[in-house]
Image 1: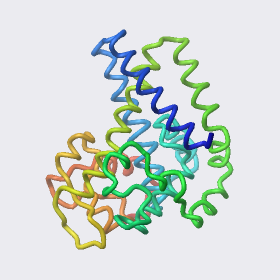
Image 2: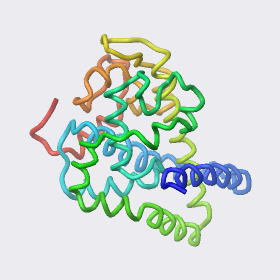
Image 3: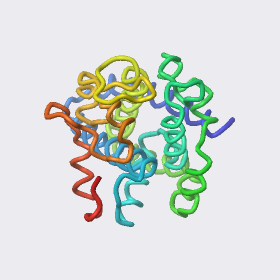
Image 4: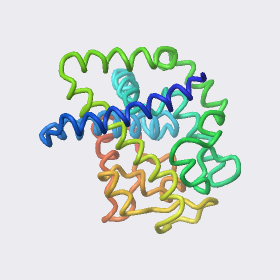
Length: 252
């Protein structure tokens, strides 16, 4: 079984465990932990670090934050940072073409990570660049060991930590990923003329809690700018978080 197949199986198991866990241990107070996990794993680990920093190099980040955010990205269960960044670079190169790793035209297959490109499409140049980082290589080699070790300890402390802090956030992130990859390439409005079908979508951004990446047309037009919003009504919370952590002196 390939690494990506293992990842898909793990995501399926997390969905089952998360839904069953919420039913068995329902407590709305614990949703506060879910929100914290979304901020840490999805907003900082995935969107700020893997997407806007690793894939697009749109800002500078100090060494310590690089290592910490790389660790946070593990628990989003999108795969290793190297794999995420390299696949995303190819998405931009071939957006909405037959070579797109996750084309919106594939609909539910893209939403469920069942298109071959999710596993097979990698930007060779991006992989070579990121393979120079020993910490990222370590995470790639030990991805599942790190995940199971941390979640296992959390489960021993209190099973609700695993449910609300690790499982439910993954379910939410997986759903949001489908919204961006499918909905934001089909429905919405354009501020820029691009060579793909990317759209800005206010409802999608609401579902993403103001993440900002749902302003997808702007992002595809200006991928090297970590600030994605262009209108007063477009909320990009991740850009505000990046402003807190980025090295000052470089601003797009």
